[in-house]
Image (cartoon, rainbow, N blue to C red):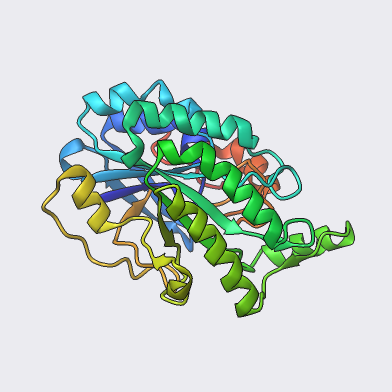
Amino acid sequence: MIISASRRTDLPAFFSPWFMGRLRAGCCTVTNPFNSKQVSRVSLLPEDVDVIVFWTRDPRPLLTHLPEIERRGFRYYFQFTITGYGPIFEPLAPSAEVAVASFRKLARIVGPERVIWRYDPIVLSNVTDAAYHVRNFARLTEQLAPATRRVVLSIVDAYRQTPCRFKDLARRGIEVRTRVPAEELGMTLGELAGIAREAGLEVTSCAEGSDWLPYGVRPGACIDGEYIRRVFGLNLSWPKDKGQRPGCSCVRSKDIGAYGTCRHGCIYCYAGSLADGRRNLTRHCPEAPGLLLSRR
């Protein structure tokens, strides 16, 4: 079993004490996000967990626990998002400077093969146009290339909650473009892919299918069975995760997070708002088996 920790929230940044408590207990509970009455028990015993995939913008709260995670016999790697957009789009996320320093420190601890950089999503707007992304990506690549082997790209999507946030930005004069002409997008992707390859990085996409192949970006999987087998020397296979969105090539995993609990406040996020994260913090108990207490 692969544990996803977590697509639904930044578990390392905000819930490391809870996570470590559950590792020591050997299990946690997870509530189905679409049916609050359905609660499942998930084993976190080393013999039941093939690998843990951490998703984060800020791993610093987890760093001191990595030796214990290693001692307990767990394999793990990180999906680490750094876009460097600043407070317009990522109000409370760590600055690019802080994130880069954390990324490089993490890579020194676990090795560059186990820290994957996500430049994800690419937000095209009147303040972050194609030329901005080429400059921004080149700057970040120069700083991060020695500390990783792969970069993941995707384009911003209009999820259920995001159009209202984009309208709020528009009232402030910031126009986010969720529909970009193929020629413009292709030119931008081609430049980014070229910068990455020049720095020795493998370039993959997230849930974009094969459409980006002509631009040098191959279809990728964030929870990638082949990558896991290669990095950790496992002779195992896992089925494709049918519960993910179209275009996703990830193998099956069990996510132990909860939506509406992240407090970075990223405007384009599908997993909840900053208000959700602050409100739901009152339902979190580090000693509880699940990330959130049940509603009364």
